[in-house]
Image (cartoon, rainbow, N blue to C red):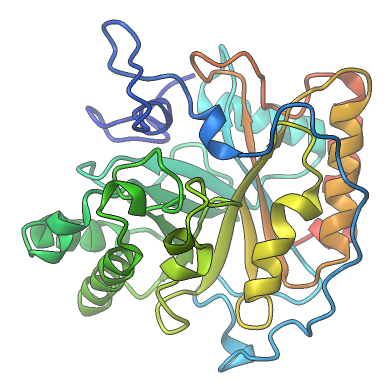
Length: 350
């Protein structure tokens, strides 16, 4: 695989973004740490998957200010969910991986997920991206003080001007998983100050708006749970407000047999009456037998029962360093078949 599809030359790749997570463990020579598997979930190893819970009963978008404008420039479509991925397959360039998945699924990914470090030049195009795919740019953050003191304004302006040059609407996912302990833009590394995150998010959006980057649809994307388990560190404490957020995203991985409703229902209940939701990072470990295929099938059913979900973005890779799990969906014939079945349902025709 080439790195060009997810970072500018000299910038941090997704591997670096995940690895430099504040765990204090660095790989020799590379500066990349062990991936934060422990940070992604606080569920003890061995906890069994719970039965699928009934779908939340709150009416979707009952509290939306303008239901006709849900999703911003990447509009939410009722009854449809976009199925996309972060795609990085061993021994394949990105265009080759896109073609391989097209042959397997009989369709293109509807969302092309890429990652950029804070000082990187944001993309104006993505080589190999399907013609009708929507880019989702996950842009690494920095300490709140470096944003709020104005010292990063030139960098932010430059980023806005580059995004303006993209030939289509862009999902911008800035400062994801801020309720985890592993990133420098998390509340835990900024004086336990979720309000600083909110101010930073709003500051970025105001600059982008002032620069006319009006094809950006803003994605606010916490982790499925808050890692500190302290009262100041709740998910909704970081919410920038309906005026500043177009999509609510969430990261959640089946690491320890967490069912989809365990991972995603808490945030669904919090925001589905106001905003469309997107599972911005999702994947499943193989726990033996048909477990991975079964989990994908559960995920498909879960999304079908929750109408406010408008996107699912699989973490489709086997190239992640220092972590044994291959998150790509096709690790077994059964998991491949389950993912193909999900991709071909009408619910995922967005």
